[in-house]
Image 1 (cartoon, helix red, strand yellow):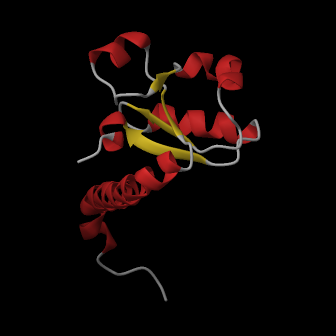
Image 2: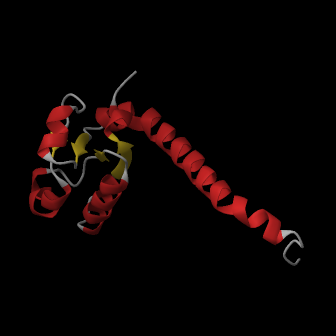
Length: 122
């Protein structure tokens, strides 16, 4: 199976299609995490917001803990490795990086919830 003969005509649309596909995937993934959130909290999970203190004070999930990403490695001892850790930030990028840090440190259940608004209950 070769490339379609009209590939040059399609090329301008490929990047946009890839971006749309990624955004749809991400939205679906975050919806699934949002549905799991009550279960994770019931298991003793804690929501950790890895944004800066200023961002956190401007709006955050009630009861969440603020540990900025740059401090996460040093302050990971404040978290229970056996309980779920639900990370959030402004877009999901910093919480994704934080999830990688905690997983490497041996945390059992680490979830990237993406934007902190995803952690709010409807």
